Length: 363
Image (tube, rainbow, N blue to C red; front, side, top):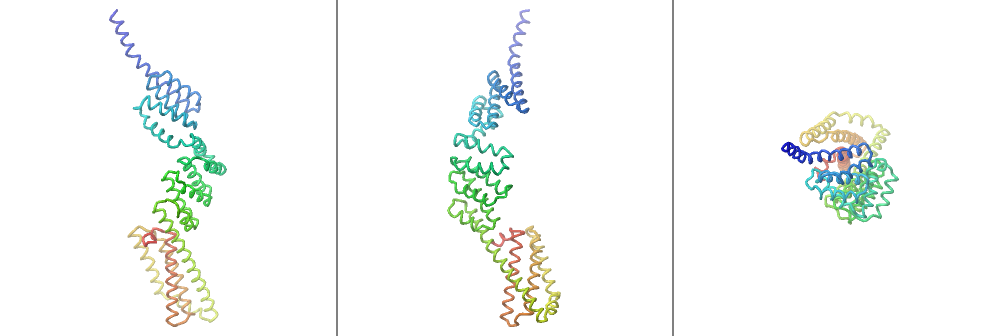
């Protein structure tokens, strides 16, 4: 009997830690179930009981989940303290790396005693507020009074991207991007991204030169400044190309009117029907498209537009030749204008349909 009793006592002592461990997950699982059901009060009670009554592993898990609840409730000071206690209790836990990452993130966003972060997260975590222009405007106004740092930079980026995208307020977005690019207290990566987005936005608005001026005194990477210069150059070339084509179109209309008055319209139509120039245009267009597609996988659509534009320029040139002077100077001038018009068509086709082609020729 004595030996049997000793065995039973030994078994009880051996099983008691296991029993305790078996009870530990029960409180944690109860808290998780309550959290998933939306009963945060009951979840906190279960996790707090795990901290107070559980073994070291359970108590650490309770701290972790309490910190998560505080984090989700925007109580960032409590969350930071909870994550620290969890890591101190169980640094080898499988959740430790997550807790350490969140500690670093919270510490990097602690300016203003977490008040700015609370205001930012209220908007960022809410789909309704993120899509509400008044909420974004209020966030923008409030953030101007915050201390410099990551939170203010992220708030301005959130507002600017919303304005640029779903709010369709690109000019206001550009103003916020510029403010962020000029903010020396913002992280370097955020400033550079804001400068890049400013250039893109101004370019889309046809104001690339303005972006270049706005960034002239701002510390931005050379590549961003170069992109602004490229967009400015392209905008100027675009205006010049449109002007050339408009003048050529007017000249063509005037030539046809003059040919009609002189009785030369039949001659214009006869020359338009000459097959050889038309065949040459088709070969030029199809051949260029095939070479670009095979060599660099470029789109063929720019060549189709070029072909159509070159045909229109050819028709104008024929009409001008019929009604214009026959001297070498006049013919040379018309040839030069026609060549400029074809180049203008080519530039606009590449700009609108395949800008990578422009990069290939240094534009």
